[in-house]
Image (tube, rainbow over all chains, first blue to last red):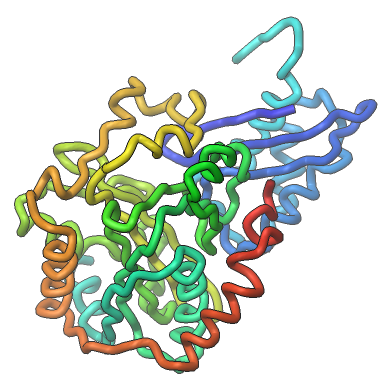
Length: 100
Length: 261
């Protein structure tokens, strides 16, 4: 499943994932954002692996925020932007689309 | 702030690497080599203009290959697909289509400055130099250079080992329609940019100046030299050997390019 969110005046955040039972699997975070240092991508992605499916945006935002390594900088995106893309990815294929 | 920026530029002992046509992967490897060497003090702060030997799509550090490009179209036209060490978006380049430069400088150059402010500082001189050619350009956060006639280019940075790499690519001319076939641009990406046609409006420098590509490059070099000082330099044998090693072990490998498939 695939979700995208373009941060207003910022960059594009793309999340690809699978839902296995009630858990997120094979999460991949990509986009044209800037992240320093490079290695910070791994813990951000790992924070979502195995997380409960079907949660609110705020829940994912908190998981991601807690995983940002000390001193890391996110430029043009944020934990919230990633959370929006995570929710959108899961909504893909749903019969009822309730876009906020 | 303006005076402080000018002071920081003038305080560096800048070296110039003039453009030589190189394979896309060699250009990317050189960015890694020269950033490391400026960070370690083996090389002085450097301005390098890129030369292109062939067409390429250059992905940003964190982009997915299949989300960004049509690999079939790239393969059919013999276009290299490579990944750079900085974040940001994919670009399509042709030998005479773009003007690209890299700046390598110790990170005290950006001390006390936000990442966003540093983007503006690194390209400020180019905007002034383009103004001398009659191009009314400005910096548009986060990382774009735009103008009356449309977007001119974009910048990206990487930081490692005590140095900052800032590189900028500007459109010189659009000679083929391959761009739209090779790069995918989704609706979501354009969602905050108003109408689609406005986002796609590009103002290549050839249209805006009627100058040859080399003339623009040498105008930029001349502006930099007279303003901040710039000595002619060349790559050492050792730097070129390291470049070739990194092309082999990293920048031409599938493991690197497809690390985010």
